[in-house]
Structure formats: C-alpha cells, structure tokens
Length: 208
Image (cartoon, rainbow, N blue to C red; front, side, top):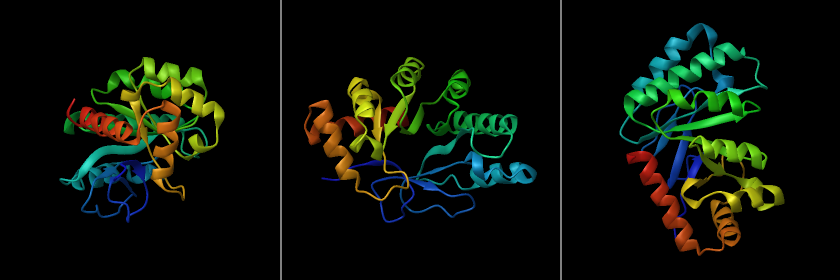
C-alpha cells in the first residue's frame, strides 16, 4: 500500500507533496512552491514572487510552505506582507496553502479570512486549545513524527475530525508508514480506512 506524505523535503519520495526550496527547479511529481519566512530576501521579494509564478507547472499541488515564524530574523511586518502576497497568489491560481507557523498561530488565524483556499498547518505539534481554534477557523492539521511519542499530541489527534487530517514527514528521517500505523491505532480504524480518508481529504482541498 502507498501512503501519501503531505509535506516532505525528499526527492526520492514520489507519493506526496515535495517542498520545493527557493530557486529550485520543480520535479516531475507533486510539489508545493512558496517563500518560507526564513528565505525572504527583503531586497528581492518581487523577484522571489516572480520565480514562484514562473515555476507553477502541472505538478504544482499547493502554495507553501509559507507563513509566520517568531524565531527568524525577518521583521514581522515584512513576514506578514509576504505571507499575504502568497495567499493572494493562491487565490488567483486556486491552490491550497501549506503553512509554516512558529509561535504565531493567532496571527495566522487572522489571515484566514483573506484566503479563499484551504489552509493546512503542517507538522502540527501544539496544545489542544490552539488545535480547537484552528479547526474552528476551518484549518486542516497535518501531523508529523511527534505523534509517534507525544501522548498529549496523540490525544489531540484523537479529537481531530478525520476529514481535517493529513500526515507528513517534513524533514525528519523516518518512514511515513510508521505514522500511518500509529494514527490508525489512535483513531481505531484500519490502515485502508485511514488511507482512503487522507486521499479523500486531498481531493477536497484540491477540488473544493
């Protein structure tokens, strides 16, 4: 059985969404394209946005990863401006948005009304209240490696509706099959059921 990896950085994984690094050439399988907060070039923002537009080929599944990060050196106001520009691009091209967020969840939520497209927080690993507030604002949550050992996160995942879930390896070194196995155990459903639901969720965010 193939398991879809919603967000990864590994070119050898074809069943998933590859995160295209800034200025890379897109692969011949599904990828996302965006400007990560840490990659914002203040002098060349328009050039970076132009690169994004020019690299949106047939296999471009989503915009991202993009978002807000309190730990990077780029000024918050500039991060927000670049995030909004990418939201607007996603609206134009009708593609979902994969979001990177570090300690700025409520600021990200404030941008939800600007987007006409599905927004997915990748590698979600925060408290129940943040998960509840994100879900109330119609975000999807993609869970990663921490689910394998974090009991609090396992409980959050248990309480998250199946139709709002994705699973990803990000840049961690482990197999996505492990995560699917753990989540099927937590949600008390078969691997087949979980796999079918993830594929259905993909169809939903892609086609509305």
